[in-house]
Length: 173
Image (cartoon, rainbow, N blue to C red; front, side, top):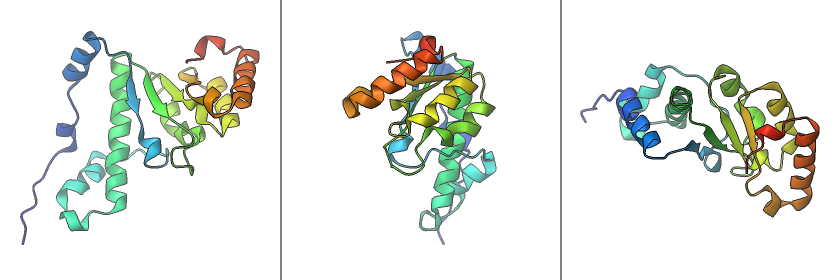
């Protein structure tokens, strides 16, 4: 049989020192683009669950193993962003079409109040999901990037509603 190497998932995450060095070099945010590859529901999983992907033969790796690994890394990146006071930009919306609406991030956002979540594209086309998140969490910032190009009407409505809700200081572009 094949020998399986054991890898600890923590060893794959750059140290805080690495991120701190990047911040000192001018990095102003961290960015997650997984909405183009998967849904945005990130369950909190254990390190042991995440490491299973490295304990089995490659041919035995399941989609669940990959998902646990991605989920674990996402939650760790949320922690690192908070530690460094760097916003975490998250792509939302049309990437995979299904389950990439902003509400999928509710548990992560609620559980990481010190992380500033910048929700790119405001979750377009599910814009109505944005408003309770912006209103309900101080750590959520809507970002209108691409929305005017996708739909001028939608961007106009979102902007007006955010201003009406007195959230103008949180709007990003």
